[in-house]
Length: 290
Length: 302
Figure (cartoon, each protein chain N blue to C red):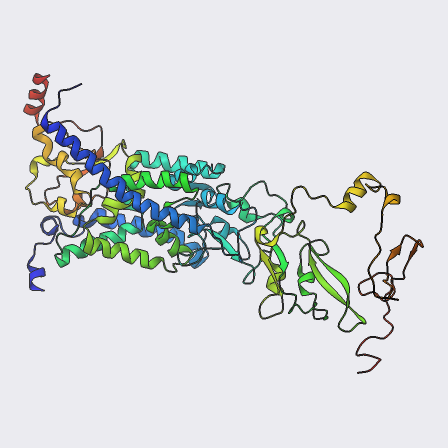
């Protein structure tokens, strides 16, 4: 320990004050930057990351903003965010409605990445999860209007797996089928070709981040029919099932109703959506009164 | 206008004695280096000639040479992410290069913002703007520490959110967008608010590279400092004038002629503007105090 001279005490004071000044000043700048960093994580729903991208929170730490993925994309799909873009500055993204991902089999963008921001473990582009397509507007989708547009289904690189056309009766005409484009999230890569090719002014099908696109069942949920399949038999003793009497208006019958007293099931014919009866007797608005 | 014309221009003496070209030699070479590197990057997107891909954060030359900015990589590392092999090789190459030639060679020979701040410094001198605010030249090290700590805390490569260096360089190659506003802000800040404010006081990229080049062999030296006529041109043209004094004026105190301060950018402007050719590039080991009597006095005192 050296003796404290007034000079060294003053110097120490000065040092402490200078350090405090710097810590506070730069700390304020850091606080601002930190809050900005937090905002920068909010990737707009329609801006997608390249295939293999880490989850957004990790991506912003791993990506060094070099743009090599942009350069090696043969379709100019990717671009780097400019300061005014609502995506973290300098990071790669694409908007499927502009240019979708063409799902190159060799995935050059991932290979070009010098960091693990794009996971080099992704070698099968069909396993990519850039997002999940959602048929977001049932009111304007032409197939929901009863037409056979089918474009999103036709262009899907994972056709018949990621998007299927599910047939349901057209209740409006009563005699036609609607072919509803249905996305199966486990196969959808989020390439966005469906969104790009949707013929509407504004796409009715859009690729969203999985977090926005998917619901999640509670962990404790068990789906009865799957448990039944697993077990190979019903999980309950069906002979002991009690069917309580339905309260119906006098004389009315409920199609499909199982009456334990008689052991009968009422006919399902004519029920909308049922598989038992498919030919409506008199389609409303067609054949009968106008 | 008369007032401006009447003022003595920095380096006027050197131009008179050595001629214009020798008095601007290193400046010209430096601009060739800066614009040449930028041109290599821009040849791809503009002319389809792909020599270099990427930008200053990471680039891949001729599908062979990876170069990674170690400061960006360090921030990424602070968030807990390690680069892939090529990224790591790139870091090693860049580290070795700047350890040898001096970290802040990046600032004066590569960085595109240097052109902007040099322009601001030049205009400031031409317009005779004096004074303005001042900040400690150590501020940049505090900002450097803050960006590293902040990266660890936020999980985001923090300085890249606003880094004018990468915004300008990336902008020129990939599309500028609104990045020009940041560049103009840096220019105006240096011009009106603070002399050598950005590169000399705030920029954590330069601060990082100064630490990297702390022990670099290549240095600017003042071997003929005895010839100095105190014209002060080197101090006025130097972006980090505090680094010159010990080497140039330290002969009496037994300090060698090599500029050892890490913040010397090895730009060589002092070599250009000195009419007496006091300065030259040298190795840090050639740092003997040449004044013989002084050296003897030192020996005796030991």
